[in-house]
Structures are given as structure tokens and as C-alpha cells.
Amino acid sequence: MLVLEGLRKEYKNLTAVDEISFSVEPGKIFGLLGPNGAGKTTTIRMILNIIKPSSGTITYNGEIINHAFDKLTGYLPEERGLYKKSKVIDIIVYFGQLKGLSKIEAISNAQLWLKKLEIEDLKERKSGELSKGNQQKIQFIIATLHNPEVLILDEPFTGFDPVNQQLIKNIIVSLAQQGKIIILSTHQMDTAEKLCKQIFLINKGKEVLSGSIAEIKKKYASNTVRIEYENASDKISALPGVVQADVFNNYAEVQLENNIAPEQFLKTIINQISLKGFSIIEPSLNKIFIDEIKKDFDN
Image 1 (tube, helix red, strand yellow):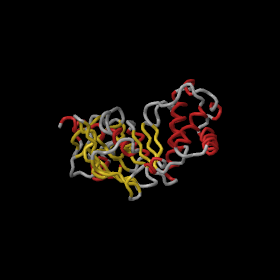
Image 2 (cartoon, helix red, strand yellow):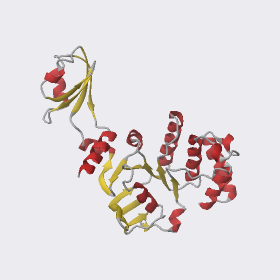
Image 3 (tube, rainbow, N blue to C red):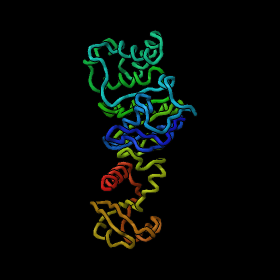
Image 4 (cartoon, rainbow, N blue to C red):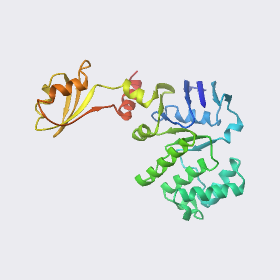
């Protein structure tokens, strides 16, 4: 388990990370979320042992992280970091050797990953000649080549079309199933919602909210339902128990009074309108993210 406790990073005129704590279990995809400048990158660099915290601790399996931990981590940065004039295979092998692989191991692993990501025909090409998506695939291979126990992915889907996004998502899920610790930092809230079991939202260096996706959605539930109907749009706002209704051609999103259960509302309206569908709306992670960050900036 990876555990951050009371982590703080101070610079001369700035506190970049302010007393944050969270833990990530093996086999879980953990979302580290926040707007630009929130402290995510500083937190990642401390986990990677690139910079030292001003106070607080980072432990892995009960021990303070050290240089031995470096070989257990893989990192996909948001920015591109490939040598444009070097061949793809040479770049991958070089970074693999930096993480402790022999040249033979690095070449063998590279061949497997190039095939898995459907770009084995590019291994002799110079990286600067590749599309953004294929460059991102190379960086993903570099992050995973040495079979790390802890994998940190910063905006891993940048530059990918929908087909390749799905390919990478499937691989990330597979790595989690193998027992890896995976930290995912992304602005794509829909992706985080689908992939992550737990999230930690940071802003201005401080924790805004954290916990499991299910717990957070339950906490921010707004007692809202979606009803689909035929020719009843003029009746929706006047229905008993309705606080607010966003009415469209053949459906409406309806916020109910707190003391009105959705099933109670359904019983009330079922004989009043020609009902085609009824469902409870959970707040999206994207809406929760936006609402909380707005609230935080207003304070």
C-alpha cells in the first residue's frame, strides 16, 4: 500500500501542497484530480522521490520511500519527453535500462509492448516522425516496460482517438487487475468516473474532497429524477413535490423536495401522465468537480 500522511511542500513564497493525506491499495485505480495549478504535479513528484516534502511522510508497504522505490515506479508525464532524432526502439531500451532492465530484457519487453499497442512496425522510426498518439503510446510503453508495482499516469489519453483510448483503458484496467497501484491524474471526469474506485480532489494545495466514487455521489445526490413521457411537458412543473423541472420535448429532469422519495413521486404521477421511462439521476463526477472547485475559489 502507498500511504501519504500530512504531506506538505513549501517554496519560498508558496505552499504548493498543504497537509494532504491519502492511501492507495494494490489493484485499485486511484484518481488524483484537480484544476491546473492545484498541486497535483508537486504531489506526483514527491511520490516519485524527485523532490522531497517539507514535512509529512510517504510510505510504501510500511517503509519510507527511498532510491530502491524508484525502480518500482513507472511514470507517464503529461508533457512529451522523447528524443525526437532517436529511433523508437533505442529510446525504449534506454529508459528500460535506467529502470534496471538488462539490454536483452528491455528489447524483449519492448517487442511485446509494441505489439500489444499495435505499433511494432514503428520501432525503427525516429520518434519525431510519429503522430502525437503514437508518441503517447511510446511514453506509455516506457512507463510500463519494467513491470512497475506503482504506475502514475498523468493525462494518459492525450492525443488518442476513441479506438486507442479504449485500447489504453483496457490495458490500465488489466494492470490494476494484476495488483498494480495505479494513480490516474486527468481532467477527463467521465473517464475518472468509469475507471477509478476512489478519488482525491485537490485545489490550492489542499484536499477538497476524497473517498469512493459511490460514497461521493451519494453525498452529493440532489433527489433528482428523469421522466420520459408523451405530450405532458406543460404538466411537469405543476406536479406535486417538484422543486424545479428542466423540461425538454419528451423528457424532463426534475428535482424533488427532500422529503419526497423517487418511488413515492412515481406512484403519484403514473396515472397523471403518459409515462415512457423513469430513472434516478446521480450527479456526475464532472458536476461535483465543477461545483466544488467553484465553491473553493469563491472562499
